[in-house]
Image (tube, rainbow, N blue to C red; front, side, top):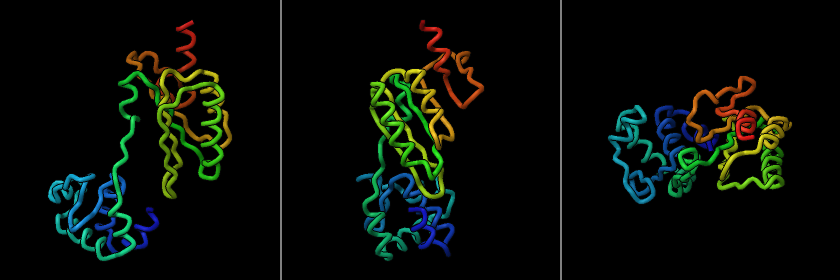
Length: 193
C-alpha cells in the first residue's frame, strides 16, 4: 500500500503524510469527509494530530476522491480492533516476533505449527509484512508460553527479534539480557517449580 501512496503522492509530501495517517488508522474517505467506521472525524482535530494545516487535509480528501484507484481503496478502509494492547491486562501473553523479509512466510507458518504441536491456546494472530517495515507477527496466547516453545522460536531460521509481553507486575523478573524479553520464561519456570 505504501508503494501506491508513494506513486500517487510523490509530488505532494504533506498530502502523503495525511494519506498514510488515514491508511494506518483505518480512516475512510467518503463524500468529502473522513470517517472512523460510521463516525465523522473532525478535520480540525485530524490536522492537529497529523501536524498539518486543515487545508492540506481538505486537498488530500479532494485528491483521493478524484483519483479513482485511491477512491476505491480509501472508501473501504476500516480500523482493525486487536487484543494486543489489552491482553496483558486480561492475564494473557503476547508474543511479538520480528522476522527477516525473505523468511517471513516460512517463519510465520513454522511459528503457528510449533504452537499447535505444543497445544498453546492462540486467541488472536495479527501480522504485518509491508515492504518498508520489518515483518512482524503478534500472537495473543491464553495463558503462559512454555519455555521450550519460546526457545524453539528463538532458534528458528529468519528470526530477528522476540519480545514476550506478559501481565507480570514484578519488575525484578525483567531479567533476560540475552534477548529482548519483557519477562523471562526461564525464571518463571524455576519459580513455579
